Image (cartoon, rainbow, N blue to C red; front, side, top):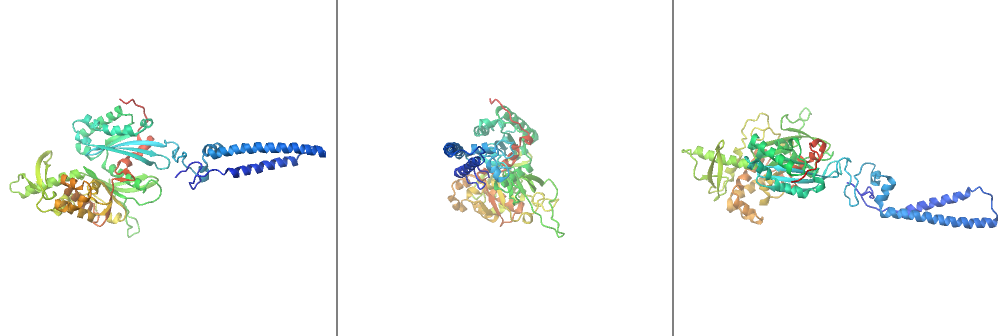
Length: 552
């Protein structure tokens, strides 16, 4: 923390003591005048001459003292009324607070704001733009940072989103690029004109474009880059600045964002970190820092080598993280898998092997219907009318959601989570630390009155009530908009069952383990965007340069 130049090390702003300063100077001036008389070597005067000289000298002394006193008083008043300027004048450019502390203290203005960056190289204030091109929509984050301390401080964030996502324009790349214009209008308004030419922008696409295929997705990204470079004044990050982000980076950046906002990372203090579970539309990510037990030989066990092992250095500390992105297990993809499983099971149990006109789906509440598109073969989609059973069946729905996880898949490296993917046991390597679940985990629980921290048992109870249909919805009337959401979205039962299945059966989190939901921390959006934006502040390594452009 820094203080104004006239503040003491304890941070309390104090005025200089002008009276002690004047007293010190007056005593010294008197002593100088007295000593000059005692060493006068002129001949001894007569008594009358001596008296005349004494009167003259006394007058000179009084006039001299008055002039000295007046001069010093003016200087002292100047110090008192304008301490920062006068202190700088007397001690040079380094402030008194720096001298007292004996080390670097960021320069600050009289209102306490920083006026000099920590390393003296970066600007005090920086902006960065990150576009999250997700599967269901695009979002922009306008970040404002200060570089007063060793680690950048996030002071403001502006967030805006639009639908649909870039992947909704598979054959119209220009339309995909222009869909971002409402987001860029927010950036143009949020970033001051003087900063636009040095505010980097990057776009990272996630699962939606990954699933679209290389050829179509690359055409979209090429047109998007050209659109950003020609229409807007922000420097576009080179290289992979406009690209599909790897699933491992998505999870790790979300982990950095969460722990940065929690204050767990960013300094050399050894603090435990939180795990993150991010549920998007097309994929889900897990990232945590496991602590392995000591072996019988007294040697700490280590993480098995592989793509899941992620070495990270941040804020003067080194971290060994476990990470994995499960592509195809986001919420929207899970719905598709469950609907396909319902149809497959029905056709296998039917002698006719035909698609029924009305299909009972245990993941719909009683009395609710839904027409859904189901993929019966590669690229072959059929519309199926589904209805909920007569009796609620949350347990049967959870069976279907567990079925798509493929827990029985071969596990090359034990232990595994689901679909044959290796994962260290959370119970053994991450038993007490915080677990944060967000994105769709938040969107499907918080509107129904779930607190910011709850156990998986409580989540299972919530799921059972939702799957009962209107019979079990009385308690939700206390939460504005909850009943309307439940009545308008029959998939709530399926969504919640998938969440409890992937957290408990998939990731093997015990039912009594507390998890935390959040959309924001300290007023800032969670997710991978902040973690991916922090490296952009280093212009030298982030592959961008300031530039002035004419905006059309």
